[in-house]
Image 1 (tube, rainbow, N blue to C red):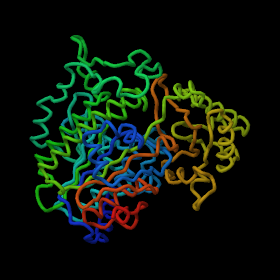
Image 2 (tube, one colour):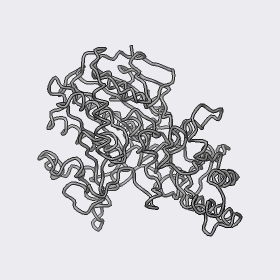
Image 3 (cartoon, rainbow, N blue to C red):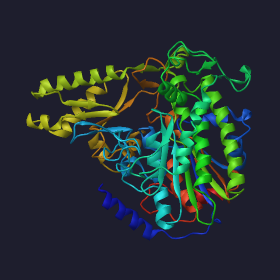
Image 4 (tube, helix red, strand yellow):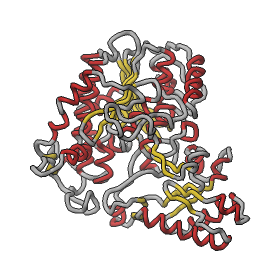
Length: 540
């Protein structure tokens, strides 16, 4: 969507926003998204929690059955859904990347060649221009232009897709261990950001080792599992002290695989609150925080590892300190928090297989080769001069023009290739775009999740559902996410703070409901074009 059209859309939505008074307005709204946090992590660790998680569980309102209602459970998709209150079919972020048929290449969800990282000319450009709907912060800024909107996370896509168009986005830059933004948002860093980066707080975390926070008997299951990490460095303690001959960049990248990464993000968030004076007056401000370490650690060690357990025990403490900071800086009961996850994660398939559960790991190159063989066979049968399979990612992109030249229509091509792909032992379903573009409910238990993820210009010709507990990865160890199964879609959802009474709701809720709920909590009505609905009536 051209930027001028998007600005017009934001303005039209702003005109429809009206003030509501269900609660007294807080001074600050905070959205915390933990990357790769499954809902069961809160209950599994509950007896050991003493900090921020305990505060949320004891004093917040929890929706225990909160889900992402889209099929491709990836970071970009999840953050855009949380921030816009819309499904990917409407906000357009259908994956972390997608195939651009006009350019015949993969497109990263926040790439923008014209907007390099600020003060780093020649770096890969980043902006929200691929996002097709305004986000929660945009609604706020259009309703209240004096409101300040910021995001800080460990990844560019999570920060940018939560910030949207009207706020300011910062994220961690692993090339040099600093926090950065792009020229889309600003050409010069505020002095406090330069000061933070010049003080090199990233260096504080590589002076020793990462060991367990608590005694060994507080952790569930075995510490060392062969399917973790690289099959060798699988047990505590983990030594991250730099060697004399190591390049600094190695450690700026490696810190992301430790809990200390989230502590660093929250340190930056504190400085942001102080220096940008968030929540300092009667105008509502918005701060969005993405705790990203859990995704890196989870991919490497899996959801049952001692490492991921230790990460969440430490994050409990980091968030507890951050809430105490907000109490003293913004004021007790002067802020409201929405807490959730952008997606979950699959168990290590090798662990499941040892217990007799049907699970496995498929190399992504092997998958692509198998699908290309199918494409070549179909091409030979219909006398098409080129392989009908162009690319393979979250789905399959087809050479429909070549097939039409050979006298084979597009729907028939998609059905033919899809049916053959379904014969692969690890594939459960292949949804052609013809099935996804049609409206209405369907008896199939997954098709609506795929429809919610389907955006014609960016989605593949065939979307794939792999068998449950089977992961697609080029890595021989670790695990992944991205499926429509509960372990990838079921996330925590808690609202806490100003005007919210403790409680539990066990009925289903969706992550598209977060932005409409938060907008009403800070006194603005959500746009009627949202897919999500406010949960405010259920919070009473």
